[in-house]
Image (cartoon, rainbow, N blue to C red; front, side, top):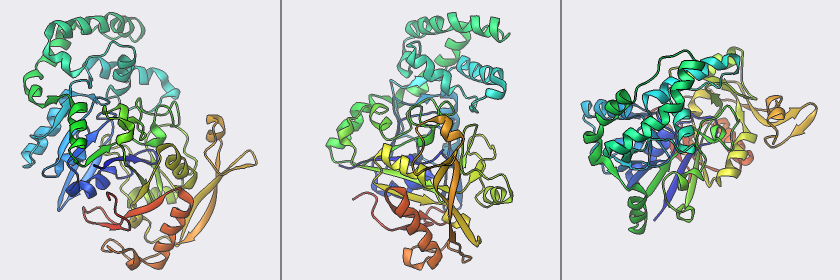
Length: 428
């Protein structure tokens, strides 16, 4: 009864959707356990490209039950927009289940997210402005709206009134914005209730029963390790636990049910938004990686910051997530480079750090110490066996494996669904 967690090992955009899709034919349930529509997966199926934001990528695999679990914050308008777009392309979405305990993103969450980010000026965190952080803040402050509240108008109205009592003071007196009325929020949310009702379930119980029945369950983390609110580059992080431990609390299953943790890591590094990034490139090499890898946000379209592979980050991810397997993606992007630098440690004020510094101040000032590896020029997009890769590409993968803290079990060699080299089985 394997319960498998897939998470990002860097700052996101590593290609988790592709890794999830790789396992799809053997998986019965795919669970999104954190985040909202502030991140995206791009999955290529044949000649079709799908950009998913809120929905689990398993929704594209026939026979899989996709679940939006309790740890997710749900913008219901975005949910239905994504579902309608998939329906229009002939995708069956009838299996989707949404946790009754998931929190709802309202219009006032989106408004507050945008105005507070602008108010920060040079201290901006780099949020997507989609209301994710304010919704999680309300959840922790116990003034949030949950999916189940949409089915009891009296409770919904009481909760919205309680939330807006404080928020309208802030919007009007601090940010000089208009007050939001209770009626407009309640009317908006209630308009989705009947369509949403058949999708809503006790998803924690559903997953527990599935695991007891020997079903294969995949837990799919949004964002990535270095954006985890506890373990990432705080405060330049997301508002949820995007590490493997979040799969248990974000879905309602016990941690002892998890059998394997798969971390997806790019053959180089990217980041969207503000915050420290030791290997970031500001020269033509960075622009080359951006163009070659098409490094623009699936959700925002923002250009991603680019840099070389960071082994201390990979080791950190392996340690705090309990990684059993890495999936290395976008190896093909590096084709054509004569030499490929890899960060193996940091220099902080003359002191070598082989691991990620515990102090954010030190991490901000970390200068990468590089080791270079010879590149390759051969097209690898059609390769499906590790031994068929150019020798230098094999050596690069094996070198990364030796310094990253876990085995590299699969390697992405192109954007296509089948453009992957499998070295070790990711399920059994």
